[in-house]
Amino acid sequence: MSVIKVNKLLDELNKMFPDIKSDLNYSNTFELLIAVVLSAQTTDQRVNSVTRKLFSRFPDPYRLANARQMEVEETIASLGLFRTKAENIIALSKRLVSTYKNEVPDNLEDLLTLPGVGRKTANVVLSEGFGKPAIAVDTHVSRVSKRLGLTKSDNPDKIELDLQEYFPKDKWGKAHLLLVHFGRYHCKAQNPQCSTCPFNEECLYYKQNLT
Ligand code: SF4
Image (cartoon, protein in one colour):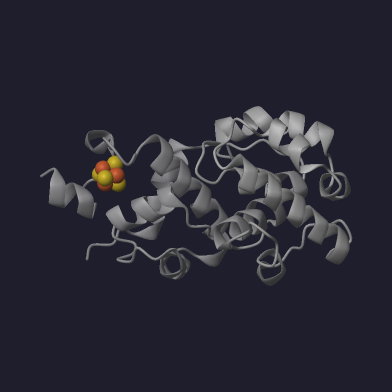
């Protein structure tokens, strides 16, 4: 398996996305957590279209914990799975109030106890919200990593381990953001822009499908 050198990968991705930041709008770790939970199976733009109103009506865990489910559902109704998401963000807010003194916990173990929070969401919160080393594996990270030969696995937990070995620890959070943006805007699931890709000499997908 051909694996691109990590320095080349990071250098080129940094050139492609020089001022990278999350596409989700948030102003604190609570809002980030809620936005990431809402982003399952929908776009960040759609999430942003509901969170301004959601956060102004329910700006902290206490107020969201005490919201009526119907009010929350109405506010996020344009999102897929909105009923389940409303239930989860109310339930996780209740847990933040009852167990974590109204704060979002800053470690994986506690984050994973929150309703609706899986490993990907927890890792995004750790890296983007708390600046801790973590690599979240979503559909973009998974696809790009496989195409580039950084992993052979389809299992997100194994991909996370492979990427942790490949990237230096102090670059884990940045690498996640760069791979997400690369997958979202360049190496798309359909019609990836291979002819202008700086990695096409090393890319397994390119070699197998387009040469
Ligand atoms: Fe993606 Fe194509 Fe670049 Fe490979 S060559 S990483 S498939 S855009």
